[in-house]
Image (cartoon, rainbow, N blue to C red; front, side, top):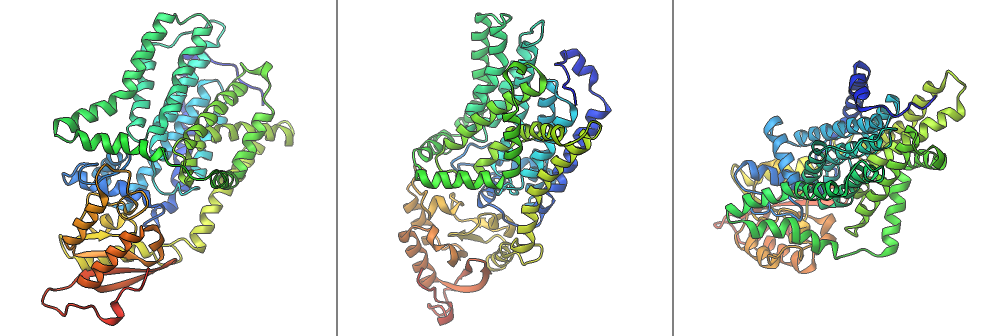
Length: 534
């Protein structure tokens, strides 16, 4: 399979045709197929539920960070709110948003491969691999890593295009338009999560430094581009801050979207625990990482300007920068490693292409390449299907989260409020219950991350329990996620003022739904309804 030369921009534009459309359609179908199981469970990862709550409250007039607090900027709930507006407020709408984000990211990876002159099959394979591997590492839920990926991958495609243009026999400098487009893409991603900063810097470096080294980008224009790019990257965040300032909510905006993430990044897990989580993530992505290593081991400096070698080098830079972004917050949760996937998918596609050249006779390379890609993608999907059939709720087994939501809806009644002490916040949305606190994510109120906000969460918990929400949800299997003092407060409240409405069995233990007793009723709960010790 001979490597194609780097094409001129005009050639690439004129060469876009039915085969490119077909490749993008394949990526979109792959995204829908591999993520089809995301429409089954109500909950995959707890974080997703917070964005659902924020989006629902936003559509009701309660703005993120004011009506529903979080330690992220407002981009994630904004995207969820758009999905809810278009598809309705539901778990399925959120998961469809995930499919769309993955399809766009895969298409951007296709564009990135084509931008440096790599064959269409490489770009299509990278998109398919991204779609398949996105179901791992709790990626079946719609977390921030999936939401920023379309913006980041599109910006990186522009950066790779800039490198290819600068390396031509007659080098070309980036125009103002591409700087504006890349800056706005990175700025939109930054409105979702600040971990985009390292990759945003890489995008600008790719756009400008090769052209500077080839002598087609003057220093004066470089500095002008740097200022313009910085303004555009910060623009969406500043513009949204202006909107909050006009409404008198600037302190809440700065606290939730800027100061709280900084406080969060100051905490760290132990080094050995971080290493354990890194190894676990790498093993789960084993086939993809193995193919990526083949691409890196077969890379030769003397061929660095050829399309496949150039794509390998740029994807390796991207992977290294993504690794720095994963390490930045210091906690190494599984979904953080989804930041690896775009660059890893490009490297794995190149590695699979190399493997096909090693194992297949001439004329069978394409079939062998498709087979290797199929194995890597199928391995990722089999992990998800195995979990879905063995222990995953909603398919072969009951879905406790939906049962809890149904019980909360029945106990709260129309317009009733609820307080979820230590369970999934998505229950607020599925049940339709009103919030009883602006801290709907339990870890921020009753858990170990109570110090992230500049608000006294101890005082807020006192206020919530004193207000007597109609329903309180307590997950006995997750009592260890609550601070001892907070757990004692909640248990005392349900002992004195609530009656057990029903219990739903989770895999880790019972989830209790407590309903506020009628003041005229006997002031003690039945013996069977008394809470046990945490």
